[in-house]
Length: 317
Image (tube, rainbow, N blue to C red):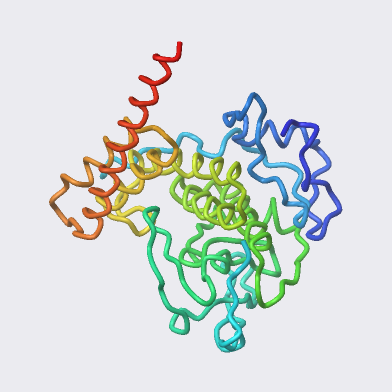
């Protein structure tokens, strides 16, 4: 995908966000994508935001150097459940414009947890709350993850009001979100995080969840791109932000970073973080330690497979 094949960022789309002072090329160059190179071409993390009509982000990269703190797919449906008892309109009060609004949301006590995978994603049935966790104010365009929607400073409020609200046009969504709808909403939330100069961990969490959504969609390329950006933000946050980070203590955070490295094929860094999670004693979780031990075993297997492949290749030369 090159600069001549970027879809979904044209002006005049459903949300009406425009910026006449920049062209499409400047947008692609302005955001972090200058650092993302796949097969020699830059990939656009915000591709598909035509529903919001966003044309420009005045940022050089997603994870800017931040001040170090010294102290430290489609939703599965079921014919035997009543969606109207699970997915309902939930009221929110916007901390930016002070307007009350409603978004569709999944009531957690009416769904069941099926499993938690090695990337710490929780899988629910019959509906997945992941698809509904990106909350967007229908009045001003402010968006954030559900668990930190109210956490915004006066300076950030000003940035949203100046850069998003004047251009925003609300969009209606059906009760059941498709994976593409969820991705669209998460991308607007990520755009908000960039505009309001959010922390590395905030942007990393959004990218991580976007990688899950692209996995649901069967889009391996974008899944990897967003996983790479999630990892970059988590590693930065590990050295610059105070624990707990994104609700995770040191052991869980170290394990997650190691698991992301493993999934991306960097076994050296993976084993380093996984080993830290295994060795950590204070506040250690037996469940996380078990996951870390499983990951270490997978790393050993993957190393052996690589060595075997190298030997086989050498024999054929």
